[in-house]
Amino acid sequence: MGDDPDHPMEPEAEPTLDIDRHLKYWKMCLQAPLPNHYLSNEGVRMTLAYFIVNSIRILTPAPTETTPSTSPNPKPPLLPPTEHRRLRQWVLSHQQPGGGFAPSSTLLSPPTTTPSSGGSAAWEAETGASEGGTTGTAVANLPATLFALQLLALLADEGEEGAARAFEGVDRVQTLRWLRRLQRGDGSFGEGVSWMPGKGWFIGGGYDMRYCYIAVAVRWMLRGDVTEGGEGWVEDWDTVGLERYILGSQTYDGGFAGSSQEEPHAGYAYCAIAALSLLDRPLTNSTPFHPNKILHSGIRNMPALLHWLASRQFVYLEPPPGNPDDTEEEEDEDNFLLPARLADLSLSPAAERHVACNGRCNKVADTCYTWWVGAALANLGRRELVDWPASRRFLLDKMAHRIGGFSKHPGGPPDVYHGCFGLAALAVMGEPGLAEFDCALAVPVATVRVIEKARAALVEAGRGQGAELAKGAVDMGLAMRGAKPAWLSTVGW
Image (cartoon, rainbow, N blue to C red; front, side, top):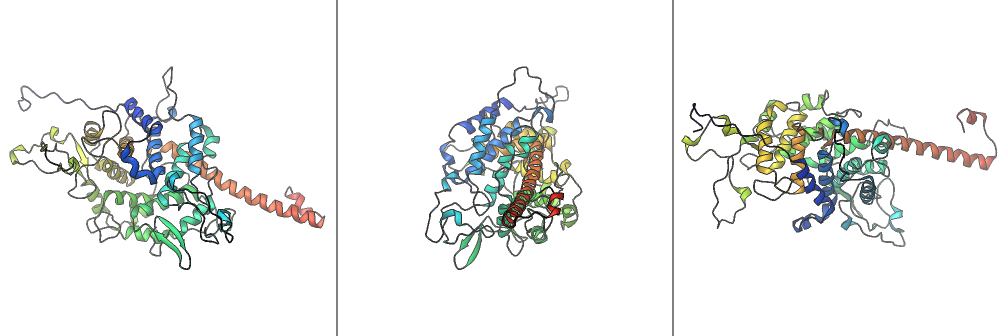
């Protein structure tokens, strides 16, 4: 009857995002033990905490971000100020004396003491190595360091003072020195670095575009505008070398991979684009949309990149009914192929009601790729290449779970990774009720403003520490000599 012009089919109602239901899911993730299938993620607790807290912030934007709150009885926040402080202390407890943050509390152990090293107190400030070679502390890595800094900003107390104190306790100088040691000669970054007695530093983690992106994000969040020779200045790493490495990793078909000879991947494409964006991003610009010379003039084949990203979208088809005896996972069912019969092919708008994204050619739909593809195109200023209405329907009709959160594939259980990036994708689309989202730093725009204030306060505190040290040295000299030159009075000492 739907094809009869005298009896047109009623248009299907647009799905809605049940914010209260999703908040209940994230409250459960925050306050109750996670299901047993998360046991394999025990070593990346910092990552899980980022997914949970970031999702709560996306779902609970400040009233000034959209429209003023009109609720006469606002609900108590899921993250009250007391919880902010507790979680911030937990994050800071993962900071390592050699720089960076460890990924999990279970990887932290009491410092060992040897006659030659004196325990963790013997860490050398520039290299991060101890004299005895053993410290009893965990190895910091790049993902944990980024998530730790993002969490500190996400957990900042309200107001200007709360934002300025968000990075309080972060060893900015040592973290930037540690970051510089993670760069290889070809410009790429590893995940972590270990001191090998007699051999020097070993950079581990393989060649992964994600580490390159994270390194740039950490640099943008911490470096600031300190000039060479100024207080708090740290030698920068080779940004030109990293730019060359990223740009040289574009593949023949326009995508990005670990190298130009590997298979392109939507997640790598996002990381490459976001990294190039952040390399050229002003320090006080709370949006990635700015004139970017590196991004728009450096990419060798921009038309091919745009085509490759746009081609990750496909009309989602319901998988055929499975055999009850079939042991294959549902996520492996083809859902991007043409119908079995040409007669079933339809060009009607209803056929394109749901549009999904994959990460590589000939792969199935996955919630997170709506984020990786959509955010990558948004960072390039080409949002119009995404079918946002049909992508939204796919997320809300097929991937949103009845208890809240999002699953990896239709019919699967929700999980914190896909739950977070499902919300992030909707936020990029401008979903009503969600926080405005930053496509390059993967946190709400309000949190980016916190990062800017926190970075400025951290840099200023470093300058103040330098002044205090200088004043202390002068006072010590005066105590020894008993004289005060006239010029000291003019500077207030």
